[in-house]
Image (cartoon, rainbow, N blue to C red; front, side, top):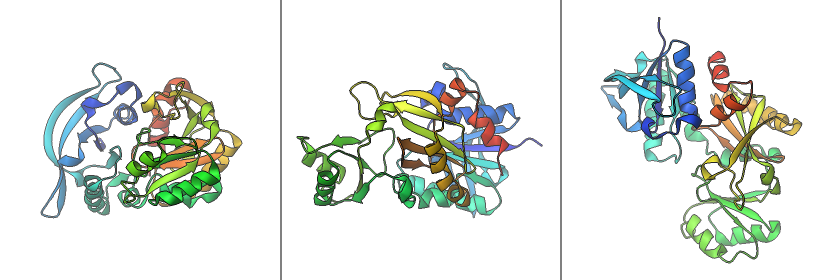
Amino acid sequence: MTKQLGIVMDPIERIQPYKDTSLALMLEAQRRGWTLHYFEKEQVFLKDACVYAHAQQLEVFDDHDTWFKSLNAAAIKLTDLDMILIRNEPPFDEAYLYLTQLLDLVENQGVTVLNKPQSIRDVNEKIFAAMFPECCPPLLITQQIQQIRAFLAEQSDIIVKPLNGMGGQGVFRINPDSPNTGAILEMLTNNEQTPIMAQRYLPEIKQGDKRILMINGEPAPYALARIPAAGETRANLAAGGRGVAQPLSERDQWICEQVGETLKAKGLFFVGLDVIGDYLTEINVTSPTCARELQAQTDFDPCKQFFDLLP
């Protein structure tokens, strides 16, 4: 019997197909004979204790101009699916929260939901890394500007960023000579109403912010080192960084060993670790990317591994 895959994600017509991991996962599922059902979080609803979605059945293509075709559209009962992939990008807002709560109900009725909705709720992608202090650089999470200034005085060179951002948005590097430190901190903390993260600046970023994909608690054999563009602090591909695949170092392997069992225990099946030099900086659990780049540059296919290791 054909397996039924649901994928909830941001609008598929807006993706960049050549680098979109959600599309890569759908292509692999289709190759394996799965039927694809795509919907957005706004299209999920509950009626009479059943969770539904207004979904489109898709055919997908590895084509930069035409990457999907809608075969039909209908309201489907999500418990009729075999598996649902949550692939919405941050921010983790109220709509995202309610989506995970609705998908809890579906999971409780026997459908595999990846990543586990409760764990997506429980885990902030910036704060989660602090569960593994031996892996992390010096960091501070606070909304108090004076504390951040004291941390800056200690470290001399720091990165500050919002706790709920992605793609390098809202990331600033500041040092004691930065002329706009006050304005940056006031903006990011919303005048001390919102906590942010400060981390010691790691000059190894020039060699790349490594994305390591973890699948069922095990690392891919290659990382994608995202190297900043000239004159840019941020290495994110969305901010102009260049991705270069490279084998994991011994330190990379060690970091993966420290976090792997926790990821597996939490049902965080597909995760992206961000590592700069010797330090873990973030753990991405909502919609980790970089599968397409690893497919193109190495002999390893994360999407094949994903489906091979499904529970």
